[in-house]
Image (tube, rainbow, N blue to C red):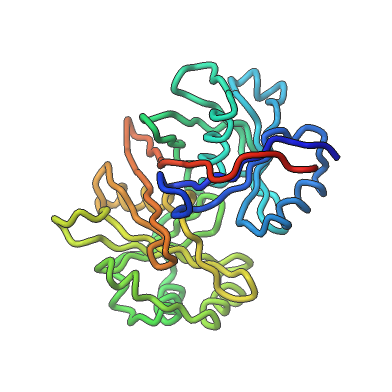
Amino acid sequence: MRQRPFSQVDVFTATPYLGNPLAVVLDGEGLSDDEMQRFTNWTNLSEATFLLPPTEAGRAGGADYRVRIFSPGRELPFAGHPTLGSCHAWLQAGGQPRQPGRIVQECGVGLVQLRQHGQQLAFAAPPLIKSGPLPEAEVQLIARGLGLSRSDILHHAWCDNGPNWRGVMLASAGQVLALQPDAAVLAGLDVGVVGPRGKVGVVAPHAPGTHEPAFEVRAFFPGNNGMAEDPVTGSLNAALAQWLIGAGLAPAQYVAAQGTALGRAGRVHVRQEDGEIWIGGHSTTCVRGEVLL
């Protein structure tokens, strides 16, 4: 074991402790898979990342650094808030991108493009693995699990870009914030209907003319011996943006709020440019020091 530089970063917020936290070990060289997984489990956070030099192939593709992303129990090929938070920590630690304002991250899915918008970082939304409307039986089950009538779900779609998200759209942000999901029903969705990792993302617009973000988002998934809710979710917002903008349900640029029901104030900035969708936000470092690993 040795002392390694470490940061704990709050992602999708400019105000500490109102976003989604991430543990970042800035020097992961020499650590085994088991050591990375054990540390991640110990942090009790949704993800921890470990920064490494790019592989030879990654360096040839222009990668500035490599990241391995772990959640409790498994490694992830890609995740949104760990991508932004890791890049933020790398830059704060003195990382210098090959191209000013543009960063290339190497991770399990390959090379991910990031760029800086002032004080924000943004990543290019990965392509959807599955899109199109959900099966009607699943929509009815989701409605029941969310305590809604079927008619409350105005639109629905697969939002699967790796995590198996299913997106449903309601009429108002108030409805989204009032949801009290039934873990037993949605757990049945997970096991019996949608396979091993059933996840539901809910979105609705705020009233026009308010100073609120355009949309309110909540993300529910099986975990913690029941139903868990994610504070702010990069992968879900990336998939929602591709669905909503593509279907004409959202403008080409908007801000989504997430985490409100958990006492957070996550803000996800969405922008479509030249046919590509970028998902961005602020990050702030809350803890900086060293860890023994």
